Amino acid sequence: MKKVRTWSVLVARAEARVAAALGVVAAANRRLREVAASAARLDALHADYVARLRTTQSAPHSMVDNMMYRRYIDHVETLQRRLAEKQAAVSAELAAAKGEHLAAQTECMKFRHLMEREAGRLLLEQREKEQAETERAAIAQFNRR
Image 1 (cartoon, rainbow, N blue to C red):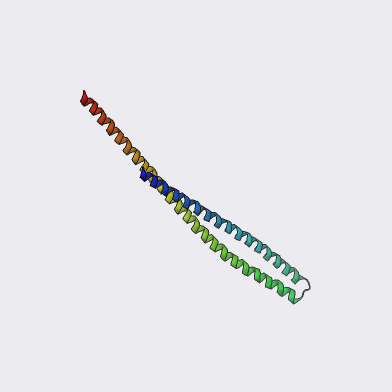
Image 2: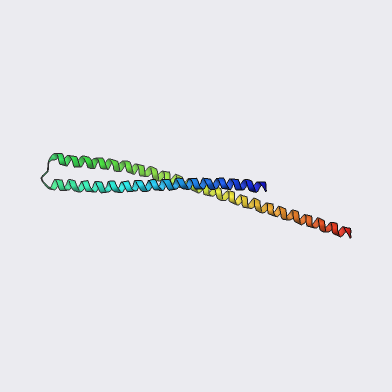
């Protein structure tokens, strides 16, 4: 019975590892959604300032206004590039977290299987022992007659 208890402890630890890995996956998913939302806001901002630049260029304007819009658009494009890099990093982190979660699940299933197999083996061993005792008792009773 001690071996089954050992396996159950290992299963519990593996399940805790699965839960922790799932938390990491959820956090990475949340960060990826946040980065995607930021990217959408930056895209909208970029489109807005490009439209303002075109409006400014079509009307009489000063060179300073034109340069300010272009500078701001360049700044937004820089932010978009940085955000794209961050999004790639978070995607890689998410993929790694999913891999860790899958490995933890596999380990947990392995330990469960080993625990069940050990419990089955012990049950079979116990039944064989009981059968042998029953046979010994029957032989002893037969020999007494």
